[in-house]
Length: 161
Image (cartoon, rainbow, N blue to C red; front, side, top):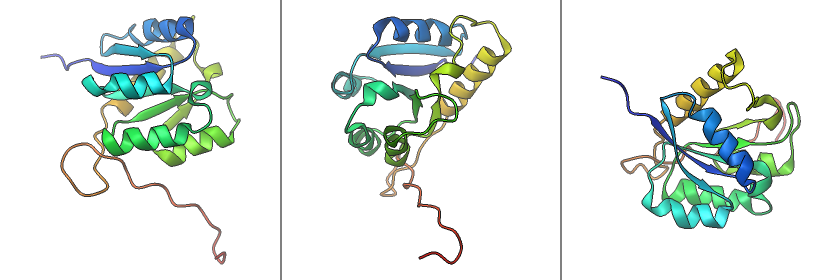
């Protein structure tokens, strides 16, 4: 018996890039893109009737205040969140805010070779997405079901206060 496909929701202000990403991900029968939203507001309103296994959000679409939207998702309907954007090795305040708010991972757009869906890198990336989508998060309040992990603590060198 085959496992059910992982249900993915995409949020990207670029409709053409979102469609290309959906085709890229669905090259694997274990992935089903069940919705594409063009803004965080649209995502927050439209996700109510959906139960995705993973939400992939474009970093530029997050914009200012994206951390609070991610916190809202994690509080109301905790689900693994993948942030797409930035360039390899680049960090930004927006990316740091998204990860601190509960996003689990970030993948730079320049590592996504959407034009090479058959390549080794593409297969590895889809496997990574499916692994993230298979995570079941625990609630912070100890309730049943999925929930957000506790926010990471800031790293400090020994001896710092």
